[in-house]
Length: 140
Image (tube, rainbow, N blue to C red; front, side, top):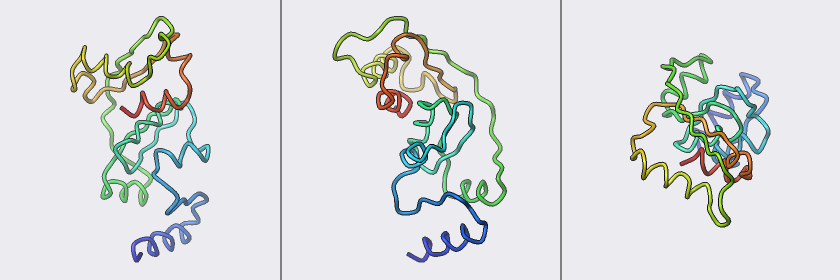
C-alpha cells in the first residue's frame, strides 16, 4: 500500500494524465485505453508487453529498476534488433489458431529462433486474424 501511495503522489506531482493503478496489467490496460498506435515505441513492466505488437507498436518488457529510470528520465537505451519477417500466405484452415501458428514456428525454428529480433508477422493469414488472436501471436 505504501508503494502505491508514493507512486500516486509522484504521478500527481508530475501531472501525468493517464494513471491506471490497481486496474490491471499493462499489456492489457494500455491498449484497452487506446494508448497504443502503429509505429509507437513502448516499454511495459511485464513479460507479456510484446502484446503491443498486435497494435503495430514496438513494445517490450523491462524490469522495475529500469522502468523507474524510464519514468524519471523519459529515456531508455536499446540496441535496435534485426527484423525477422514471418509471411503467412494463405488463410488458416478452420480451427487453426494463432497459438497453433506460434507452436509451428517454435517447432521449426526452436525456442530461441527469434532471440533478440523483432518479429514482423504479415500476409493473408495475419490480416484475417481477430485482434484477440493477433494479441496471442504477439504475446507468445
